[in-house]
Image (tube, helix red, strand yellow):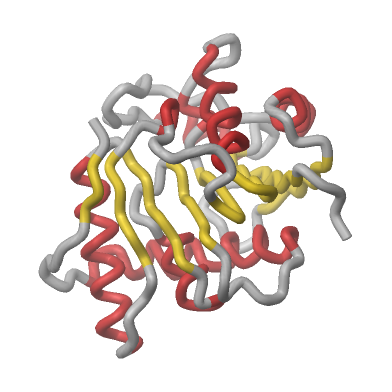
Length: 220
């Protein structure tokens, strides 16, 4: 099922600390893209959850962003967070919401300037075709840039989270399987990204992450 979602929901500050916590990592990925002016960019967050990264990109770079998630409850949560940030900042953000599956992204090829995900691909185990499928779909709908943030299997906090956390997202297994940098590089390359940067990131984060940014054309 795919449908566009917007609306006015009550302001709720519950997720504000979570959003602020995610902003440094969002900025870290933006620095890897190294694109100073994003005002005319159209960005998709695949598997958006709360949408904190997209909110940051709209807030900091005036980008137009689309949040995509299969779970209607997560979309409603991201709408509440967006409206709350707008109320606090006293400005309207160019954020849109769409319910749909990251394994079958409901947009044509080459639609977005930048497509990214945070904490999505690791939900499927190694050897499960869906672990790669989501990256392939992200590459398909991107004109150029693709960003992937996944937990780093070498990090103690990431290993602990993988062992103790049980997810309840629709269509996803309960357990996650973190990445290593070699696998992330191989999967992004196999999905059609010939130019890739990968960086380990743990500063000001609840767990250790790998951040991969790929392009269809060379970095400049």
